[in-house]
Length: 322
Image: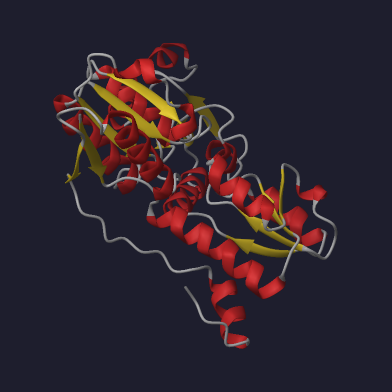
């Protein structure tokens, strides 16, 4: 069996920043520390922090007054920040800068009188936070089929934004449908879909051509991980989204010679290596054995600094960073 390890895979710069922010906050302030929603959408990451005393909450009111509350990488609406201030919480903002970019675009378009189509998935934390930047100015568009039912005309000022973790192909199809119906539509000068999402999708698209099976490491509520599995299937390959090696089904590997393994932007590298170990133990005793090959399609060197409030607090007590 040949295992192709897709690169890039796993943690992106935004996830690294959010996780390191929470780690540093624990060192500075101790636990419990409260986090509004999951810090990133990954079961292993969330479980690890819960064991360290982090409490994940779905409402700001669940954090006792005066405690520390961290906003997750997916971003929050201004209303959430206001409630945190009212409750005198020490608020730490770990929003990914690429999500913040979308928030600023939303505020700009709303102030200019545009109605904004947000291309994304209903209920996703990032979508809720983005639409909360300008309540009343948004309509969520989840598919190209939604476009025909939109109640707008040629005289309306219209703009679009996208969730950062979408399928590039799906978003392009929806944007094309919107432009066909609304020629006056404007959009951001640079795509909202983040570099990491695009790079991981490109790696899966290329490497799946050589594979019989694609394993995507990531949690079911991870949008970018779901898109990787969907993309592999669109390429005609069998694909499974799993949290770890304990979810592997041996029956998947019948008539399988080459497996691509990748990981969503919020999945830790250790779960990838656990799967490599599982496959090596399972198939390594055969005559041909198992070969493992790193295949990097695009290099990544993006880095996001920790939030200013954390950097300042760490510097004040001379806490080593990293």
